[in-house]
Length: 310
Image 1: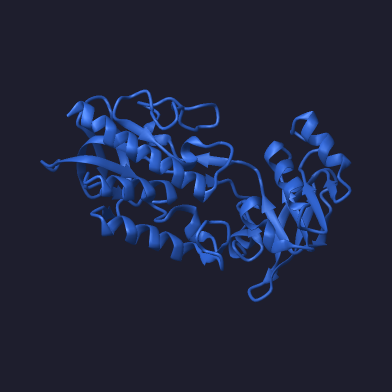
Image 2: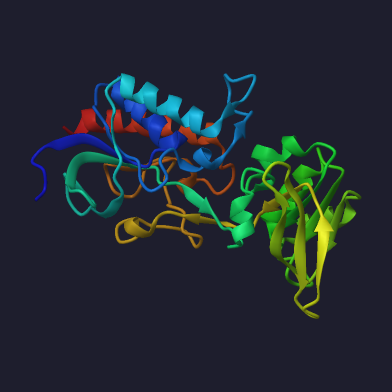
């Protein structure tokens, strides 16, 4: 049975965007309810060293950073629930949010479910995540100074990541399953003109090599034409084959683009009282600090909207 209480605002997601929204909403005395979802803390909880978040000159572990986010929001009255949202109903106010444990209602909703990186699906890849395998070049490239890395992918994102990594590394290989890049011509030309970059054509990664202490030491490649396999020595592997926005449960009510990101006017969706923030609306930056900034904006917009509509 639905609970009788109607909350001021429900926040779906507990990464930097969701928890920043919770902090600002709590400080506005809105008593937000946060549903943590299947990945409490978001993608930063599977990140080891975070050195690019302001205020931590020595760096901080991803899980520790997100725990501090949560503690700060809770200090001001945010309520965090370890529940997964299964469905929503935005057809009428108060809005309805259904989890495995129950049904909740709120005057406003902030969506901060984020995205998940597309991975290769290899057991060895999962084993070395955070130990040389990454899906965020701008987050982790600094750790590979003067080392050899590879980027898997052939689109603009992969090329952008590879070009970024040349600032730190001694060599960057682009591993692409075809004989032609999917990236735009201007991006492809930049790659071809960079002396630190080399494209490995018609190849897929079949295994990530390494050990638990050292981390990644190489990869095993398979030629998509000849099916021959070979090994390549590396210090790091970056997977850049896209992201999966977590928007499935919202598509009945909200618009998404061709990749699944929510379409918004800044943080406002087409439904009055429903807002979105963080990576779920960000196809470009996908950084913790930018996600936190949009979470702040979403909470302030909710506060203003509730004042005008209650």
